[in-house]
Length: 302
Ligand code: EPU
Image 1 (cartoon, rainbow, N blue to C red):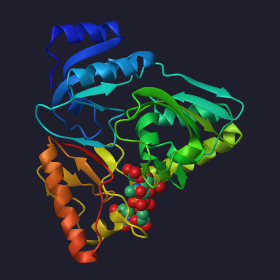
Image 2 (cartoon, rainbow, N blue to C red; image 1 turned 90 degrees about the vertical axis):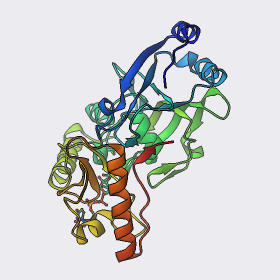
Image 3 (tube, rainbow, N blue to C red; image 1 turned 120 degrees about the vertical axis):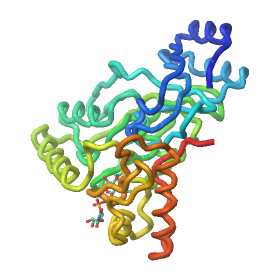
């Protein structure tokens, strides 16, 4: 979708928004898949409610793009614009056992920053690609750690009220790869409370997680991490692997030969390729194991 009207563009500029016309989301997502649209960089938090009102009045549909590491975006000209928080120099500060971090910060960068201040607990999250905001929204987790356990406060743009609000951690539900945030809520900042731990110990934990990850996941290939959630008590990766589907393809979309729940873009995969592969694998797992796999990756398709 394109913001072609000059008055809207001029008003957005007054509100501190940078307009980037015609960007390809294939360059903004870890899968390297996605069509074209306009992007707005929200440079000022305080004007966000007004920017949202303007977009609503102008009937311009939008989606929030974080790190782009857990989305599968449709091909072609997209029917919505994307909103993005600037990622250069996101704020991070520590105060006792509390870490205050901007949602645009890199998740791994935040884990390392806190480690340097002798604050641990999040070692398992070190290799999870993406932004802090995306991790909050999905309650990202790995190796027994979920970010939600450490959240004390989240500052967000709440779509339901149209205002910026601060929500206490206790009032947010953090489930397995799911939270009570609405899809239209925009994470802005988080306050985490972390256990004190000497830097050296945290570093040792980080090393162990990095090694485990390197040994089992295709880190140097284009993917969105795990495609499916694990069904209760089961493992999507193991089931897909047991069906002999590693290396199975639809066009350039391929089941990783390293971890069967990672689907990779092995060349010029389209969203359509990836969706065909997802449906195919889901059906085979359903037939053989009777398990209904639910997407873990978020699909941006109208
Ligand atoms: N397995 C296989 N073949 C495979 C992959 C896995 O047999 O191709 C087996 C493993 O040997 C193991 C079991 O399946 O016995 C579970 O595998 P793994 O330890 O790799 O964990 P996972 O359940 O597949 C989850 C998360 C990952 C996270 C890891 C590590 C989900 C959907 N996935 O994977 O998160 O990194 O644990 O904690 O919950 C993600 O969210 O995108 C993601 C990658």
